[in-house]
Every structure is written in structure tokens, then in C-alpha cells.
Length: 401
Ligand SMILES: Cc1ncc(COP(=O)(O)O)c(C=O)c1O
Image 1 (cartoon, protein in one colour):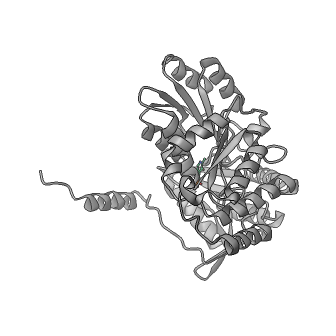
Image 2 (cartoon, rainbow, N blue to C red; image 1 turned 90 degrees about the vertical axis):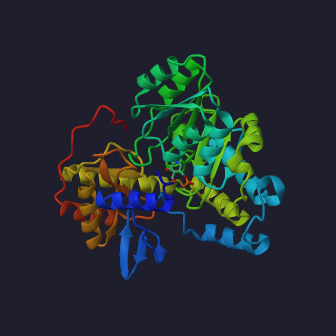
Image 3 (spheres, protein in one colour; image 1 turned 135 degrees about the vertical axis):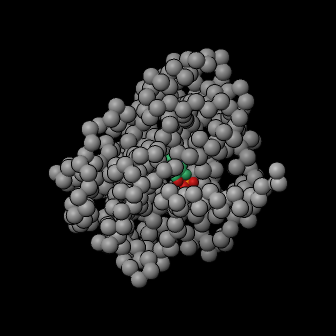
């Protein structure tokens, strides 16, 4: 057998995706103005960004970013452990720890790297990592990178998670779950998982990328809303690129955890620190997310308006209380056709298809933001009504708000 050509093999996989109508395509956005996007010559009202609190273009964030860039330059010039760790990073870490009620926090350049870093640093061959089947790809990848045995339980099924932990009683164990599931919008059964982990002496990790800023009285996320502190959930990961409108991520937890990550988390150690100006902007975002409760209230009101309207139209809406409001359409073709029809009406909503979601569960992932107005929601509902989508299905056992 001749040695396979790697580029040719990749091209074959891409062609297979094209054939299965699953090929992903890049779209260039020429200009963003709140929820309005310009692409090509078209102006589209977007329902697919993760800017849940409408902070991405806030003048205070822009002011902090440009001020810090003027004073400190653009790049951090180095990894944190060399000379890249600046005052702006330290101040942001302190603010994030205080906000989330954790002893300390540690910045990473992206959420993907934070999850890889924490799982690779904590777990090793012979350990077990139990995860919800619908966890974000980077939690799954982190477990694979660590060499631990990865066991995945059916979505939100605490009894199945318990069986997986019990079947391996002697191994060091970490249970990891999304706080808010990125493609479904539902909240994990956090309190039950915390009780399970306490009983089984497993460490609980929650990725609250989509809960931070949105849930909790002061926006501290789904753990705060469930009244779960650092003792119950020692590992909290959240991102700065969603409700906070910036980019980057952090791990928050006990001081000893953070000390250990600085020593052993390779995606922390061997990479350039995020630009200090970005940290300065994120600090501004943290303060606004805490102090401007009206953003959360407005978002909640828009979610309620959308859900009420969608129920009235009998749309196949998933059970979700978060800013992520998926319409479950089943086939990839149905999801693509619906997204294209919405785009013809000036609305941008992404069709999410396998392998991002399980086969047969393609959907429109609609996301709402405090940057939207009631009229935008009504316009979306009006457009959805014209699509004649299949009616709402019965709730499945895994459905859970
Ligand atoms: C649940 C979840 N975790 C982690 C990430 C990765 O974060 P980042 O975009 O900062 O890499 C995402 C999405 O991007 C996410 O949805």
C-alpha cells in the first residue's frame, strides 16, 4: 500500500461533507452595529451572536481598550510566566474571583484553551472523567488530551452519571458539565450533580460560558443562581467572549487549584498572554454586567416575549430559560432551508447541523440579546410564522429547563 496523502484524504472528507449537505461555510461580516450586521450589500438583523448583554460595542469597553492600548501597546509581548502578566490581567482576575465568589481566578486566552488546560493539568491515565453527552467540544477534547478514561452520560441524566462514577469507585474522578448547554440552552441539573459529586468524592467542574452575565442576581452565572459555592463546585470555567462582549476566559476556584494550574496547565504556560488592553475592556464589562441589572431584566423580558409568541404559533421550541432559544427542526435540510428563508426576509439565524449536534437534531440556534428591541422579536416571530415549520414535538425525557 502506498503511503496515504494527507491533504488528499482531507479533501475527500470535505467532499463527503459537501455531498451530505453538511459543509460549513464562512461568511464575512463587513460591519456590526448592535444586532444589525452588514454582509455583502445586505443589512441583516442578527439572532446568532452570543453578545447576550449587548456589551460588545459599549463605549466604556471601547474607551478602556483604546486607553490601555495607547498606554501599554497592543500585544502582551510574552507568556504570563515570562513578562506578559500585566496589572490589567491581575485586576481582572481579582474582579472575576470576587464576582463569582471564588478565592482566585486565572485568565486564559480562550475558553477552549482553559478547558484543555484544566483537564490536562488535573487528570492523568487511570483517572475517570464523567461528562454530559452534550458538553461543549472543548471539554470532551480536554478529557481526551488528559489520557483519563472518558465516560459520557445521556444528557442531564444524573442517575446515569451516578452509575458511571460508582462503576469506577477507586479512580480519581472529575465530573464536567456545561452550566448552560451551548446548542440547547437548558441549564444542567447543577444541585443534583453537586450532591452526587460530594457523595462519590468526585470533583465537579462547570463550564458556565453561556450562564455568566445572564443568570444570578448580579449576573455571576448559573452556579450563583443555584446557590452553589466553591466548596460544592471547586472548578468554574467561564468565557469573556459571550455576555461580556470581549474575548478570553478564566478558571475560578480555590487558591491551590490556581497555583497548580500556573505550574501544570500547558495551554496557560506555553502561549502569549491576552492583550492587556483586552483585559482592561473585560474589567469594564464585568463592572457593567454587575451594576446594570436592567440588561438582564430586558433580556429576560425579550426571552419571555419570544417564548410566548413561539408557543402561540406552535413552533418546535426547546425547553430553555436562557438566551439560547433553539427551534428543533430535525433534518439538516429543514434547518438550512429555514435559515435561508429567514435570510431572504433580512434575518440572520444560524442552522446548526451534525456533527455539532446529534444526527436528526438539526436546528435553528436563535440567540437573544439585551441589544434587541421588542420590535425585533416581533419581526422574528412574524418571519417564523411564514415558514410553516413542523409543530412543537412532545418534550423528551432528557428535556429539562
Ligand atoms: C460551553 C462552551 N465552552 C467553551 C467555549 C469556548 O470558548 P471560547 O470561544 O472562548 O474558546 C464555548 C464556545 O465558544 C462554549 O459554548
